[in-house]
Length: 287
Image (cartoon, rainbow, N blue to C red; front, side):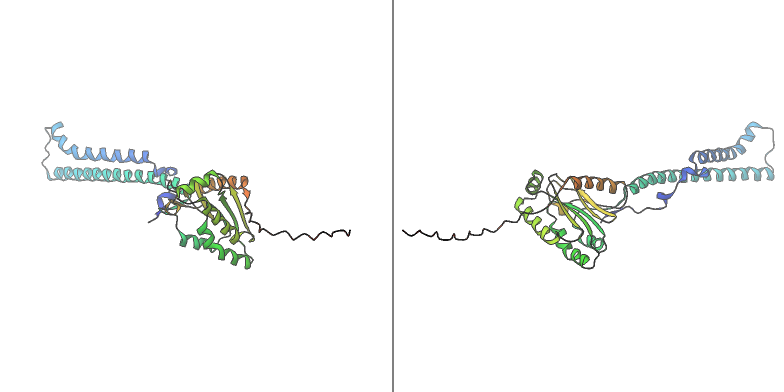
């Protein structure tokens, strides 16, 4: 199950700006009530000690003493409940701070895998902007080829930036070894993607020699990102779903820098070998 960070009322509260929610104010008030309650409870028992000559056996005196004890007990109970409430509010304030910090990142959910085809599909279906990085992007090409073509035919092309890692680079060699694949498989995947999407309006493809530490798959205002695992098996890699926030902005800043320094990706198709036409026979001059 994904981890969801749904804001609640504590994420939007701002208790520190309200005087009557001040913790110091409440502590002083509750302390006074608690002390007053103790005094009311203890006072009836101290009167005979302080004033031994007084006759405190009248019904009125007994009633007053009992009333004072009851009031004092209520004060003590109320103060203790109030202290408990204040402590709970203190804990919730800590949750508020953590929740506010979490919301500022833009984090929406966390998944233990990267194969989120159904969720990707829902977002791509209405996407206007897509940015994606990868070593092969085989699944991306297979899942979205027809949709990209349909959008172009409908005169609503998707603006897409596709950044691939050069299969001849050291970074690609390391990842291929981690995935137990041949680098030639990367090149074959690139050729498939180029043939599928290159030339479509709005689609731009570039190549970089840099190692990709984090996956980037941005669909409009939603970003899927996460590290590439040591094993290279990206399908089981941790994936974070991020909305607008500083984490979204930071990741896209890095993508923009990679995109600016990357080169347009074109594949040089092998040229067919054409036999040279036979040369014309040379005329032999007459003797």
